[in-house]
Length: 432
View 1 (tube, rainbow, N blue to C red):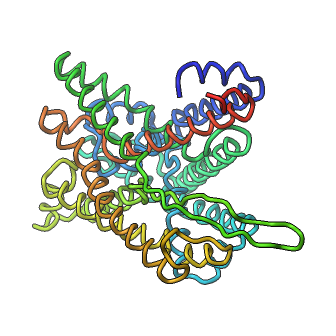
View 2: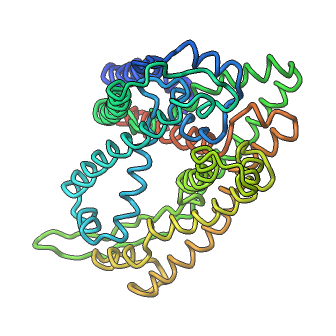
């Protein structure tokens, strides 16, 4: 989509109204990321942030909050509770028959699943806010090496108010995301995540420029652009399985006789496997910090998993990403269900018999796509870190696989939706 298309979007009155609404919601979201939670010593937090490097144990949650987590702001938890709840509900639909039936009921069932996701989000927000505040109460826990008193008054009532405020902040973020989806352009939750990620990148580039000079800054920018281009190229790659529908008479009307295709992407799993892997690797360091253990195993975990740049961490990250890619694809795309639905409506793949042969063929194609797709995800997860380690800025530039995949995925999807809405309002678009 060219710059002229964006200009055309703002020239279209109703589309301009939607885009301005999205920008307004994003502005509110970013403002909430800087409003401190009542009872927090904001100046002490700023001193810790200035003197202590960002601890990678909180990198994923801090990433999805746009840096608000370590500020202990009203929106400190960001969108992470909702992401976690969505993943849990999606996994439970495979093992709980009731949820699987709701998923197949269409819009009504999806509305019920969305309601369950909201309830679980609030529950997770309460747990996460309690855990973060319990760390913040003890000097040196939230910011390793900074012994500032972040919460001067540790009255039980005040701590309870802080938990409620942070949980309410998560609920407001959910509401903002749903408003963007309903009244704006694109998926609201995805756009808020996208905003959180890109909000931290300018500061990271500025930090590299200020501390390492112009040459390293240019090299860093070049590495980022090369990796970003690779991600864009692969994310748009797909295998199209042709499907034809036989003509059939229903009453007095003839249906079918059309041709379409099933698009199977190279990266069928999206960003979820990388989030899974990051979350698993987050646990050992968190356990060490909460227990305060000085045993040999704790020292080994602190040495190899606290920075996120060691060879052990990166190798484990790669292997977990590959594993979770296969796992997630296997539960989200069922070749048997797809083959059954095609057979039900008279669809077939040319040269393949309907039913089990179709399911076997889809599984064969899916396996051949998942293998390179999993290796691609694993490479994207660790390649930026390896590249930045090579030029000596791995400890200060958090531009990893999650950031890249979300930025590219959400960016491409939003651009396609704007382009589709432009074409609906301008028939000239179909004639080009």
